Amino acid sequence: MKITEEIKISDNGFVFNSKTGDSFNVNPFGLELLKYIAEDKDFDSIKDEILGKYDVDSLTLEKDFYEFCALLKHHQIVAQGDPMEFK
Amino acid sequence: MSKLAYEKPVISKITAGVPNKFGLPVKQKIISEIDGIPVSELIKDYGSPVFVISEKTVRGTFAEARQAFETRYPKVQFAWSYKTNYLDAVCSIFHSEGSWAEVVSGFEFEKALLLGVNGSNIIFNGPEKSEEDLTLAINHDACIHIDHFDELYLLIETTRKLDKKARVAIRVNLDAGIYPIWDRFGFNYENGEAWNAINRIMLAENLDLIGLHTHIGTYIMASSAYAVAATKLSNLFMATYRKFDHWIKYIDLGGGFASKNTLKGAYMPGAETCPSFDEYAEAISNAIISSEIPHENLPVLFLETGRALIDDAGYLLTTVLANKRSNSGRRTMVIDAGVNLLFTSFWYNLGIYPAKEASDYSEETTIYGPLCMNIDVIREAINFPHVQTGDRLVIERVGAYNMTQWMQFITYRPNVVLIDSEGKTHVIRKKEDIETFKSFESNPKK
Image 1 (cartoon, each protein chain N blue to C red):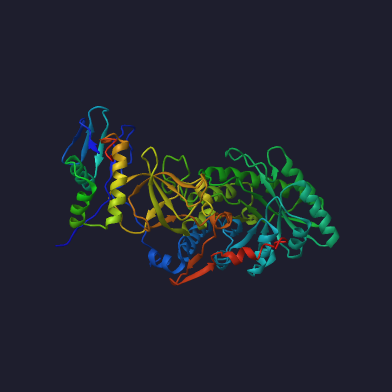
Image 2: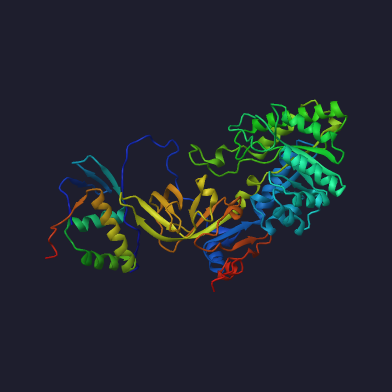
């Protein structure tokens, strides 16, 4: 999962897609996740960092993370990685 | 080191469109307690979902309505509309405040009698009255509001059989500027049908015409319509006196006052736009007092308002079952109370609020009930904060019609709890269980 080239993210949670012209608001925690995703971290390493920092259980985080990812995909903020990455 | 507070990650598209002139609410409203009792405690004790009725609110609202009318008109009598909420405990509160009973079926009539209402303080409305029902009403000296000519002739026949007199009124339908006109009930004013009915009743030896009744519709936002209706009934009242030298005893303006719920499609919230009791009272009282009726012969003004008296007192406490995303990315939520319990969700945008502080971020959400049916939608679009599975929500203004029009469908109907004026809780209708249904059925195959 990669953030597409056209996406610009500001430090205050404003996200702009220069290809489609769409703009988005993201809350502070969503912004933090976006930064991890931009650094190409996978969920397990993101999870370790978040669980150490925030008052949240592992299952809630997992559920919310994947829902957030689905939204990012829906809004074309992230593109699917290598479809054969399971090989 | 303590950990940071967690908040669900949210991303929302910024859409250009017509800006909301009201802006966004500064703070999300929460309802954490009802009459001082925490929502969490009510659910712990009585389950989820659970209907809660506040006696304090019922009595407060009734006092407000009574004051509005009694300070403007000398003779006012309320009659509690059973069909709006006929739980015994609710009816008893209204009767203890002095309300008569307004019933529309033999079943409701029996309920009123069981609650100790004197038969002569029962108004019997509605288009469905069997000979058996009429006999019951005549024997108890109730006020029978005749709906149509067939009923009038059945009543004449029944009084002859019983050799008793019946106290009657006619229901009149009229053009008060509210469309469509509810002309399916009663006798029409404009085409002279109501006048014909009055003439026939005055000629019947066993019928005593004591009232004129109309009910112009439901959720009427224009108080002026009641003034038109009151004027037309006053005209019939005087015409009856002039022709028959007979003073009718009461004029019944029915119900239909709007509650503070917001109708679907309404631009402004109901709480901001619905007329107050004072506005309705002013329109009605002024029309009767300004009519030709001499002051010493003013009729008693009957009111059968239901919705506006009980809606605010009812809450439905519910629990979040799931947060989901539709395939278009839209946020959806499933709660444990569906349209089977919330008949009014078909025409209102019901107010739904979290029971505790929730996320500061909100998102347009569709709220579904738990039924395995596509129609089970409680709110199609509501700007709602992010809540977790298991969080409690409160749906407000559900006191009218939901506890009578609810359906036993797919699941059981829940407990109904009354918080009395002293703040004590009472189950006033028990949650159904499998035994409830076993008692209705018999199975010849077993």
